[in-house]
Image (tube, rainbow, N blue to C red):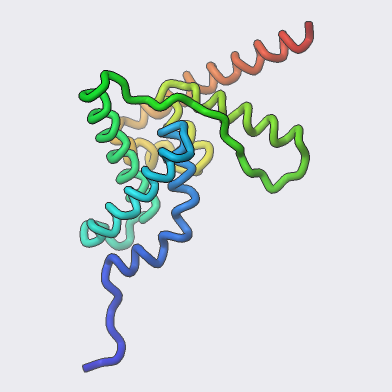
Length: 176
């Protein structure tokens, strides 16, 4: 018997989780709008990935696979909540956004941008996070969200317009 053994799929996934988890948590926050719910969702996604490690196709992007798991878990949570309460989205609460750049102005701007993004409709919010924060291509985001590329493009255009209008309105108010 050889002293070298091949790592199991779960061990391989466990090896990359520390690298992927911060991004997965940020995506979870964009879905839930709440730090505690983001913790729960990200942890549930990691557990689900470990449980279903044999379903991961080697050579494909593990991060995209885990984002898809997270998205599917969130949709399931929304459906369960909707059945029980008729709701589903968690209210946006104050969130601190860490930025390595010093300066209170920068922190305030980051918080305002995040609050504004978190107030977008869910479809736009998650698309913005996947493309602009996580750096996925339109095609990759479409695959994660299981929608056509045109839908991703439309959601981003609508979100950009809403964000631009929000900040133009704010500048107008500040100028008065």
